[in-house]
Image (cartoon, rainbow, N blue to C red; front, side):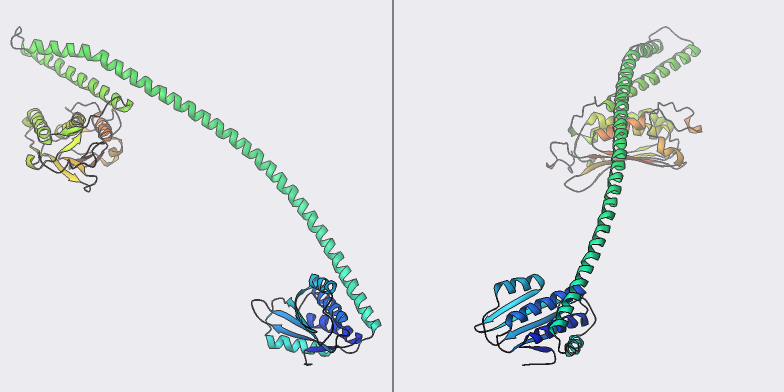
Length: 458
């Protein structure tokens, strides 16, 4: 049945009209010239193959979907099926769907359309208008039209070849540029790699020098400490022997001077001992021996020591209730050294007020920590000096240093030992108000972290 969007297919003239109508319909819907020629050639070949198969029709319609499509359906009433050669040729030009029905048949051509804003109705109207212009055409006109299409196609192909040649030349130039850039980058990378290797070599050499210097420093301080300890002990022992009541009587001036010798010897001996301990700690020679620690006994001994040493100053030492102290697994000797150094500083620089020692627990049940806090109401430390108090041999300068001899090793040594115990040491201070030092160490040793050893009193 013929419609406005269809063409009859009976004679050779109809094949000519079908080719011209298909080309105009494709142009009306925005297809490029090559696609117009492909569609027109495919339909003319199918139409020529179907001549003599009864009355046939070629209908055109637009279909909307993800992509708009021109659908051309060629139907015939009788005769043989299209030859395989024809179907193969047409399928190389366009997408086809062939549906045989005995003596009747149908071939559908699907031609994707370029994106446009036309509705299906508007496209169908354009198809009807373009097909209506497909009037009678002679064979000569048909051949001339084919010749024009062939010439246009050849010109378009030649233009594409010229454009392809130009693009190939641009691509070759780009490739040359890329190769040149790659060569330059390769050279720069090689230069950078050489520099990096040289830097690594220099760093390795510096590391070796630092390691050797550290080892030399360790050997030096160890030897010096051992060499100095013996004569200093002799000086201190002789001074004590002279001051002994059973020795020959001394004049007050002699006794004062010998007491100064004994005190100076004790100071030097303390410095040598601290140096040796610091060197051992830094070089990893100090071994940590974990064992149950009786905190009640430890606190009692510290209290007795510092009350006997600094009690005459009139500054009380406040200690915690001994009943509430927990059981801990740590190195008692190292922990004692830490607390002794910190309490010595607190008592030494506190002339009024108090020195307080607090012991408590922190953390959760899976990883509890012993927290020891030493607070004093002494001179305090200026804010500008807080960043340097843990440097070896550094001492805060000021009037408070008068009469308080020291080595500048107490705080660095205490922090090093605390870290060996797996803990942390934090110091806060306010000038003229006092200093607070918090020491936190694990309650459990490294081998019994899952045992319930903490939390109970001894």
